[in-house]
Image 1 (cartoon, helix red, strand yellow):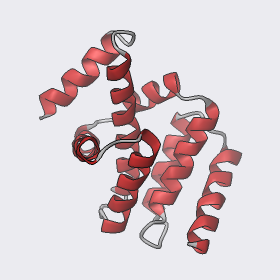
Image 2 (spheres, rainbow, N blue to C red; image 1 turned 90 degrees about the vertical axis):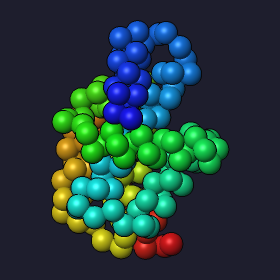
Image 3 (cartoon, rainbow, N blue to C red; image 1 turned 60 degrees about the vertical axis):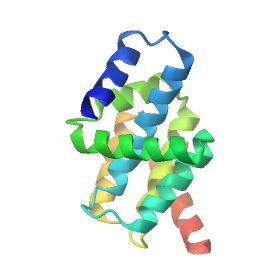
Image 4 (cartoon, one colour; image 1 turned 120 degrees about the horizontal axis):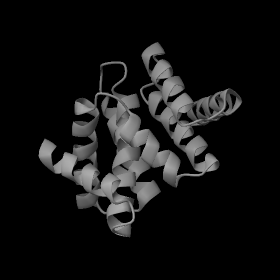
Length: 154
């Protein structure tokens, strides 16, 4: 399985223009892996977080159940195996505009709050990823407040 993931990234990063579908699939995997990183940052994968992650990915990428299952599995494995976030972050920065990167940070906050608490390790991970994604501190705070407001309403 790890070989499959590595080939997937190597093919796309070696020739980013080779295939739109592959590029999109890799972008989906990069996004899912970063979100998965946030969900597991506190060393506890809560069922509410996993359910929300699945919902977020399905909504964002309009995936059917089988594709969503595969994406969740690959993202979990990739997040477990990754030494750093460079491959994910660089791909996202290349394909997402600033507003989309802010939306991704908001999704991270929503995911971190899904279990009813914002663990300090989750906040640290989101802050680090927001910095790597070149999301300003003010937008980092704005997305956090948006997610907290949504969590308190729902």
